[in-house]
Image (cartoon, rainbow, N blue to C red; front, side):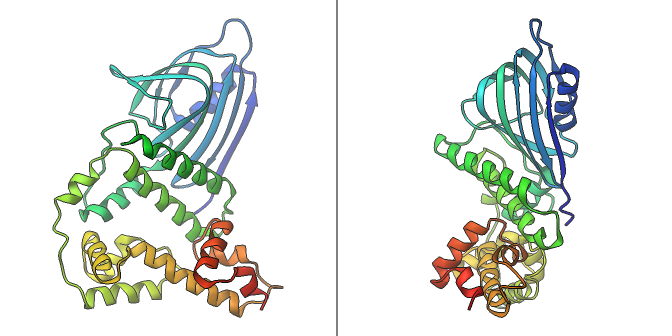
Length: 319
């Protein structure tokens, strides 16, 4: 996985430059210039191969625009209105911008000094997660609504999007961070499919989740143990186990009372502990070990580590 990041930071009162910066991130944007004063555009965006995190605001603009939500690569684009006024509608329906929202293919909107946080995830990453859930290799997910399925899920998406944006902006573009980057993408894809209405659930419910246990599960566990330092997906593990992804989920639930990826994280946590035990505090850091084993947030890693091993990773490293 190439984790290289492209960064863009713009602050300008030049209307044409501001619109150009929006178009470089979102594609087609048509914004009417203000009549009485120069606008103040502020945009900060970080693009990785699978995620694009953008925060933008425009003061001094009150008008409408029509936009296509086509990022540079096919992606699902989400938004959270942080401040200002924003009204959006699609065909004949208003989009509730007081809640997190998923952009349809194209929208009309009216702006009043908006401040927006956007997170886009590659369609391929979401389709991969959906195929793991449904067990269908040709499945392509389709979202059927623009708002979370329940108001209680609003906070889930807000916190997930904010966390993913922070990780996208701060994770280093190094080989050691590849697993951590993949973990963030997998988290966003998983939560997106849980929060916004889509066709995955119905397709999954039509699958027969029965299947062989025993030898297949052992193949899955062996594959995980042998590839802890590589990017692992449910699809990869299922192929090694000779099960469908849905059958793999069922086997882990039946026999281990967990999910494949939760097991991966647990085994990697043990591997991280082994690495800390054998390392010198003069030669490595907790953050470096956490990244190497796919934990992008050192604080969360430390809390989970302490909960499992009853000591902090720093204490383990300094022994």
